[in-house]
Image (cartoon, rainbow, N blue to C red; front, side, top):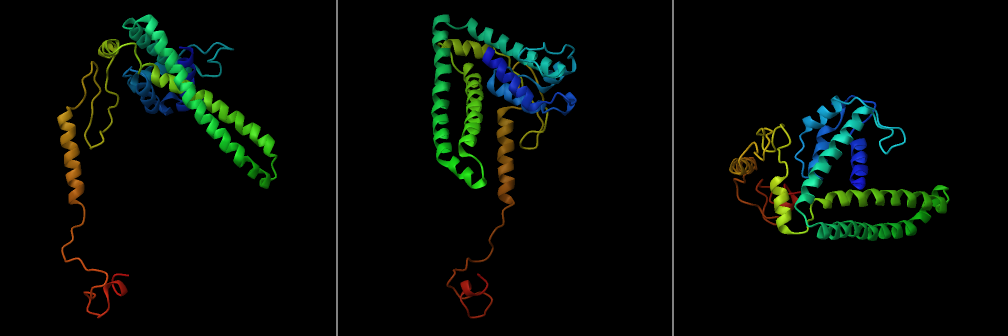
Length: 256
């Protein structure tokens, strides 16, 4: 949960700003990230509501220090929802097996991203000498770039753990029971990808049936096919006489 809270803070800072009104935030992008990584089905309106009801500023010296009251409220709201979902997940798990699965999830994220980090550092070592052409000390540049890359590594490791922690379980039965009891909601009230509209609803009900979406996709594909130009005359080869009657080959006349 400490790792998840750190990542939530980073994402809230990425999609929001403390000196602007919450109505100007990228609330939809934040909701998309939350619902992609955690089984919450959180609508954008709930995030906006949490920001609007903000009253208390973060405690000085805490990990939330520097956030505005609205950002602090959103961080707490998302973290509390994730904690509730995690407690629901744990209730269906075997505690001993769950500890092994979570340990594997964390170590596999570190192992995978650490290997990529080593490849990136190797590439940096071979290319940093070019900075000398710009009158810069390659050693100083290497230290600065290496620190930046390592900082990105730590963020990526924590983000990867957040992405996988709810995608692992001690057994298939536990995973199915968790998904059956997890909250489900559609997310957006914006026009759909094929020109239709979707309505938000709770309890797992989507705004459209799957058959309707497939029909719209087929209609869009058919309309796109009709819009393509259709060849009416015979195809002229590059070495055939030009149809304009010049006597030249098509490639040397109108086919240029």
